[in-house]
Image (tube, rainbow, N blue to C red; front, top):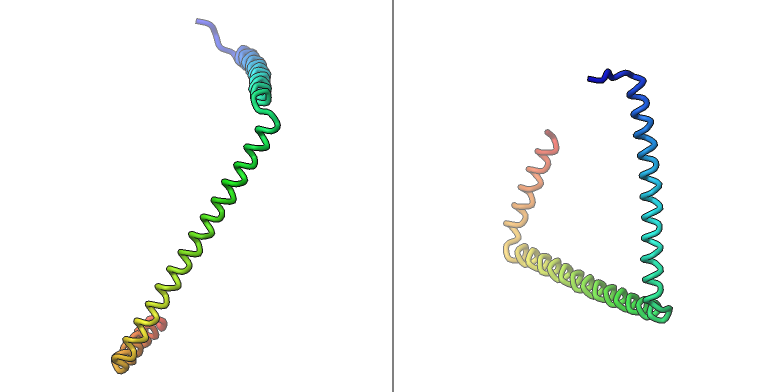
Length: 119
């Protein structure tokens, strides 16, 4: 069995480092070449007019999506507003129907809230 020394480990580590650097350089070069090839093939396939058309289509889709979201937001706002008005009207009718009960409930809630705040 070969004896492992610090010096041999350093040599192996240096060799590994050089191999890794070489592998990284080769990978970078290969990647750059592949990206360049793909870019060239894409640019050959698409003319400037096709690119402009694609951009215009994307703009239209974006505008339509924005308008849809805007309409949906308005609808949600109206729904929330209607629910708030319904709740307010219901609370108002409860107070009008039985004002003494409403005052008692308000007093009770205030008393409990005050008691909890002291603790």
